[in-house]
Amino acid sequence: GINQEIWGACIAYNLVRLEMANVAADAQCNPTDISFVRAFHIIQYELTWAAATRAYGKLPSLLQRMRQRLVTELTVKRPGRHFDRVVKSKAQRYPYKKSKA
Image (cartoon, rainbow, N blue to C red; front, side, top):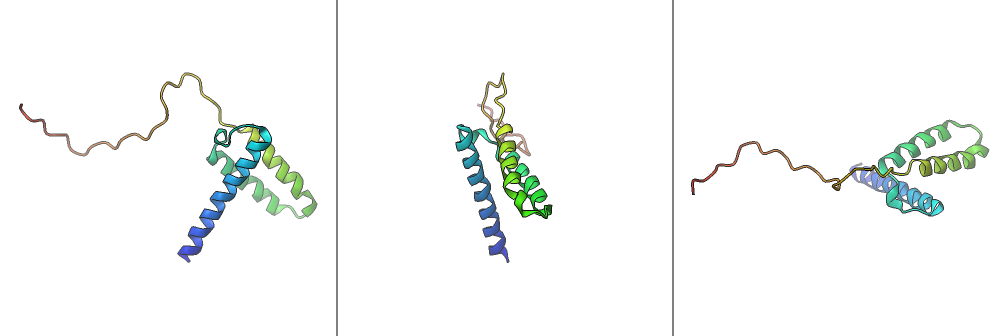
């Protein structure tokens, strides 16, 4: 069961990345300009609606709308940012002992 969950997560991750790459190629931008989290949420939302649709003839239009939403949600370059995003270091539990030199 664990292996199946891991493979499912890997396949889902790669499918989201593949769709991001396809959308970026159509929009003529870099795939890194599309946020993974936003793309995942948009794909999840649109596929939930597609699953609820009884008319299978509407699926191509639903997928096209999903791709259009991905293009409109390109990562916004925020002005005034001076430093790259980094993970903050964890606060130390105890202070360092200072030597008397």
